[in-house]
Length: 64
Ligand code: SF4
Ligand code: SF4
Image (cartoon, rainbow, N blue to C red; front, side):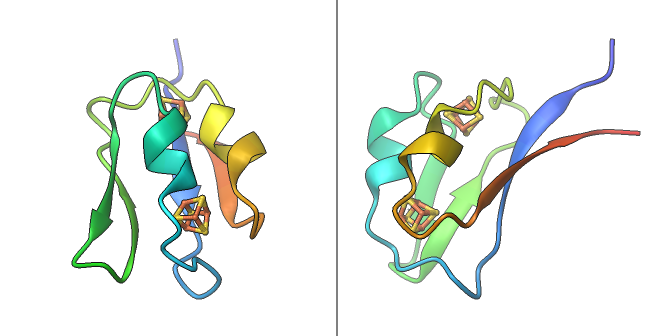
């Protein structure tokens, strides 16, 4: 099965932390207070973070 994962557009991330708070897998950390960083090994591509992000800067991608 192709793996899905969340990808953050760092240019638009405002480091609010909402995605990290909502992620059921604890796969997101705010990297040095600058932007959200996704741990692809933990991420299951559920899309919760993407729907939560007020800046709309998380996309769910499929690995190919
Ligand atoms: S897609 Fe789901 S598992 Fe992956 S970072 Fe977002 S909330 Fe977490
Ligand atoms: S919810 Fe969006 S803006 Fe907030 S830290 Fe996560 S990716 Fe950045």
